[in-house]
Length: 134
Picture 1 (tube, rainbow, N blue to C red):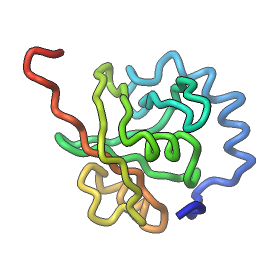
Picture 2 (picture 1 turned 45 degrees about the horizontal axis):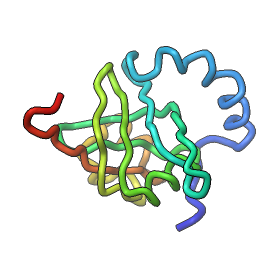
Picture 3 (picture 1 turned 30 degrees about the vertical axis):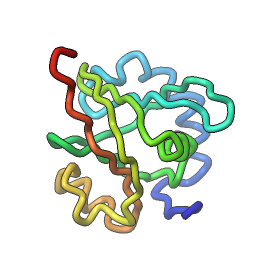
Picture 4 (picture 1 turned 90 degrees about the vertical axis):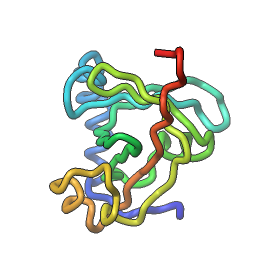
């Protein structure tokens, strides 16, 4: 599954990366609605932090793939894990996978599930914090 349906045109990706992301990055992870996923490049091993809109219930994290299968998604799928900062908390995610749509993705609220009816969703399990670790 290399190409996925997109909600946004490619030109918007370039504008978002160049102008929007640098402005909101200092707030992402602390501000509701904006999260930061920390991942490593598949071949370079370089550390990246990417701004995403993540949704979470107790045990599942979901991100609507409105931009298709992006590099961050490929990196996390290849690594099998990542860290996500959302609302000031950092969680570790494991077992990443792509759901073909938002139907049946428990972590998505109703409005996001409707939005993702025709778009794939990145889904991962939130790893419980170990006893004795914050």
